[in-house]
Length: 383
Image (cartoon, rainbow, N blue to C red; front, top):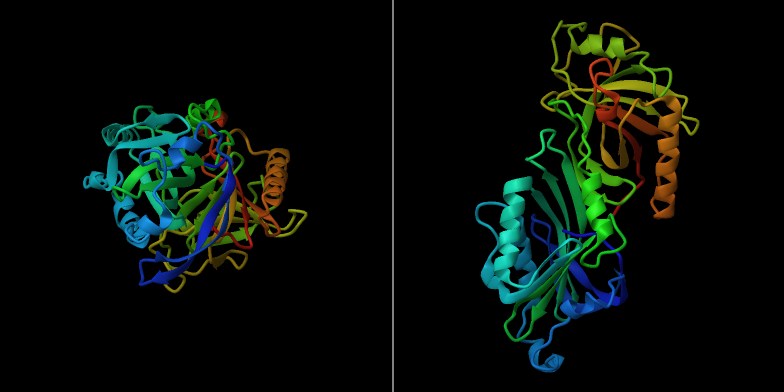
């Protein structure tokens, strides 16, 4: 699906209200400017609607196209993109034009065949974040798509986030074009070599153990990092010595292996976190995540005073993934690069950072180790 370049001119941002518990957003008839990303002249023709030689006058057609109803339809229909029900093909012109940086189709049949291919080869998980009317005959959606390449033995995870710009034919009242823009590249033209490279970069092997991890949703993936929304989770923690260090790990591991007040053995999870809370990254704790079925009131007490149970409230965080041995210099370098990228993109980062280590260093080749540097964000919005 898509990422962003820059679109010249303006979108129009509707005044929106939330209705009910499903967070569906309906649009009024007022529009405010919405900055767009750049799409070159080769893509602009598929974003306009031509009926005969010109667009029908707005006064004669705007009342006959219920854009609010189409926004609601997309909230209902797009979540079925890759399930057995599938999307409703009758909502699209037969000659609908679909474009993303590496794929194009000019019929609804070709578009549906592409969806079927992705479904069988990549097992996609599609999440629709919002849909809004952004022009007289235009609806923009924001989404995340996470895919696993099932044909490769290590089943790499590919993540794409971005916008879809969908244009409505005012005569047929159906979608006649669909343009995807990816957040991770600048050149969203078809055919984008940058887009192809972005795909291949995500095929590299990482070993993620088949263990429970803290639950999070990927909201946005750029070329340098991804933004996640973490659900609350519980950790057992003690003091560490440095971000890349192992001091304290045996103490917290002992807790989950039965060295607690009831001698209960708790299932192992991944990753192991080392978290620094000060700007110098010197005040460090080592943490193991407790499985999600547990709560603080039901967990046994630690046998040692220096071991604590703590609930982390989750929230928005930026993460960068890397392989190899996470030495202190490497980790601090990744933290600095990530913090600079966030500042450049106008995101406010909190003090400190976390190192997430997913693998047993004694049993995993360094080139397939999965490590992440994570920085909590003050706030984040997809609007």
